[in-house]
Image (cartoon, rainbow, N blue to C red):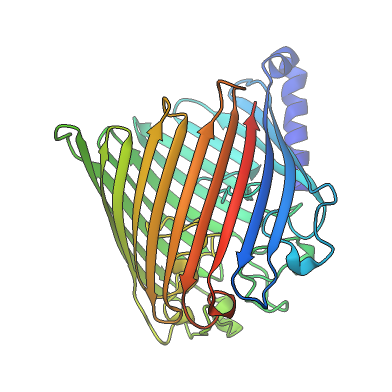
Length: 433
């Protein structure tokens, strides 16, 4: 992060020296305040219930543009104000870690932009299917590297990305790890992660990603290639087509495919690290899915299905190795729930039914979902989900209240503590300005 900040400051100084008025006069400031309360209530009597509170501020400063160049920095500060339990076993560390304060910079980059291309270098957010912000906590995940977005035609974007390090949702700075490394690896403060690797494992050397997206009125598609160095090489494609309306009904159909292999010097294979309880001689994952639904006025209904093939000689018996989403449940598979999906559960099948309705001029959105997972390593489990989003712009522009609730039942091999059900509730109040 220090190098990114220095680069940002140097460019800012050069540009400001030449066109100081434009650079500072057109600067913009925006931000967000987030007040979150997370609760984990376990039916297993020997497992302690957990909770966490956090009040967090994110402030972004974007300079004016001079010759297409600009600089951006986002700082954050999260505080529990002494409300963390003295019993660390009762803290939901996935919200902001076990401490009472985390702060730092989550973005610090320089950018060149024109109508055809955008180039960024430094610490930044990414928005790709398997490398994104995972933004369901008080601080988004971010990445240190460079990104090029080329726009050759309307609705079409081509991306080239190279990252060196990343910052997890609970980390204060950037590190050469990912979610498979243990918490505090190389001094990190990463929590809520998979953490399967031993502390002696070699560090990751970043990720290269190439991809393209296309959007039209009826069709959306994307294709990506990821080289998660020393973890896996992944190809991913998905697309959704919305058919012409039939009366009040607007049907749509989506499909997705994932294929992943080892790549060179695989860390998980070399350390014989078990994923979902199984170590393997290679990474080898194949998955596909479909999603079909219909929109009716302010309502939307859909049913999705995913299948992840099993390979007894592969890591995780054929698990998808996802270095930036595993345990975060932020992958793009159609059947992923708030708590987990096939990335966390391993090979098997899953289906998910979801309904959503918007009311009060779209200010209030209510959604409910049911998902079922039938897996090779973790048996059969079920998740019931509720989500309420209330936009309160009429009270204060940018104010939003959201509550997400999920109850999970079933599974084997201690998928849920003591093989008993449990409930996760996330109350989130945010104000964007």
